[in-house]
Length: 68
Image 1: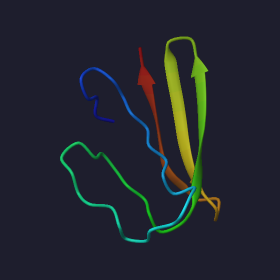
Image 2: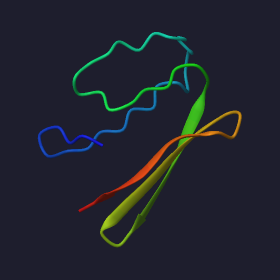
Image 3: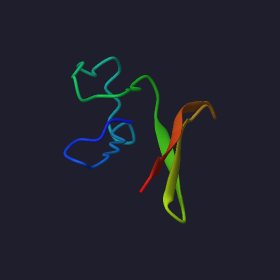
């Protein structure tokens, strides 16, 4: 996960209108997934934020953690 100006950003845009193969590459984009819908599970435990992005097919797309 890349921080931008000291902030980590999560954008989950595949929950609305699905635009398959529409992600433009950008230097600040760490990863992308635009071939199915998905959701993100976030848990904060102490100084750690853990996340997991899951597709409709129950496939883990991305996961990780960010420490304060």
